[in-house]
Image 1 (spheres, rainbow, N blue to C red):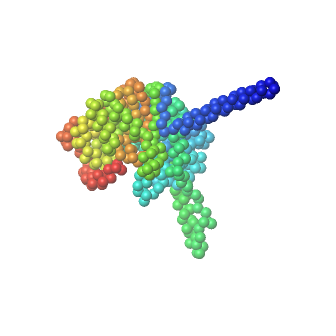
Image 2: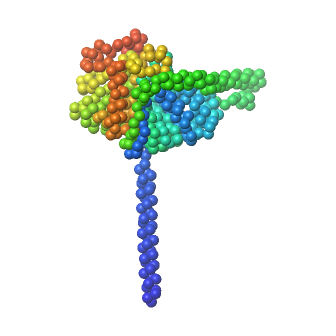
Image 3: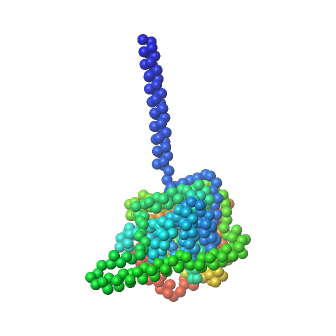
Length: 506
């Protein structure tokens, strides 16, 4: 009897133990699932040391990209809004082709809107043959006007989940001080550390998004695909299509594999070998151990996009919670009601808000300049401290070829510095398009006065060397058309009414 009772007791104890184990196991799975659900590649805040470098200089930032690609061992992800069919584009693609031939996995993601002609089906065929995967975000034709406005404006180069460049520069001569007519003063940030993997994970979400498509590359015509009652006409159509195919394939082959890459790289290397001091002073290196990555999520359509916004709210919080000062550099500066509200909050507290942006002469977007000029007076009345780029290069800024120094220049940097300790570098412009239509991302380094000072100094160099201070309305009226050509002024007035009507798209 006692034996039976003891067995019963032991059995009860065994059941309790089993239940405890089961409860612990279930708790573990719940916590794990919650952690997995809580993780987002679009918001990441890390407190481990990251090596960062501010890339203020155009041709050096190109060299930095080429060096990253050359050093890649396993993977390369590249994501851009604009790709030019020019020398800079050739250098980048040729380097990617070389790494793909070495077995490195290369994926390239473009927004479709501005690469329709440059990333054509013949170039895609060469890239596919080289082993490079290419996809496109939002391939909707412009007939779908509203949905076609939603663009992937992110600009990224990621190597081996370890290193990443994010910033204002697209791939084109004008972003790397190499254009013969007009160049951008721009800025990127290079990061070496764990957050690079998070950026890659966000890239993966865009890559696999329902809004991202693969476009078929060109294929060699086949006689069997041409059908015509008249055999001579059938043969004529086939040969005509074949000649067109071979001509275009040869043209893109020349672009991709031109020997100019070698001579251009030699010139680039020689340029920087002779500017070692300037390289160090223009491209500052720091350790950031309080770093954040923020990105909007892929979306097309008003409802989806409203729920996919991340970065603009981080920017709003930084501006309205600033205690002493905010310094902004943005190529386009048109405040929508949300941005205006947050800047008003900052100004009402006595926070100093300074803005460096393009004037009409220096801008690459006359329609934005036309609308901005209508709003300047109200900003000055708010207490905004405004500086307009006058279109000249910065002093002591070494250029790849001396002839480019005399060109027209405009800012394209997207930078915010808050309270001399928080730095933001990314793709976000101060305009309605970045707030409502474009997908943007940025790196934020907090609690780092040394980096903030260096970044602030680089903006102030641009302010002092290449801008006009709009101290009051009278000054603005006097200087707003400085150096502006008659043709550009005509265009300025021509687009004024459309820019007001479509203010929300600027």
